[in-house]
Image 1 (cartoon, rainbow, N blue to C red):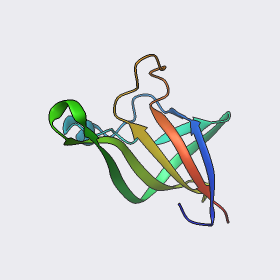
Image 2: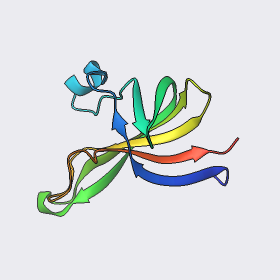
Image 3: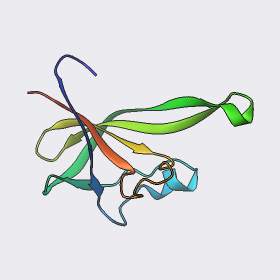
Length: 107
């Protein structure tokens, strides 16, 4: 996150049936073509960068496991946002909280 980013950390609702099938076939989260946040719909028109965040898994001898996948994206309205997908939702949490808006770049 840069000084020009506004931290959000709120769940978003991805557009159903629009996830990147090729990514999902290889075991990665499939970035949707758009999402809804705070009752407003955003279309993703460009991926500016993407990265993964790993964590050690103690029960597997310290193996690295990619827990979150981030995308810095540009929306149809010109907003630049960072969103992420959690690979596995924690026990007891809603599966609807898999996709998150991490931050929005201030203009």
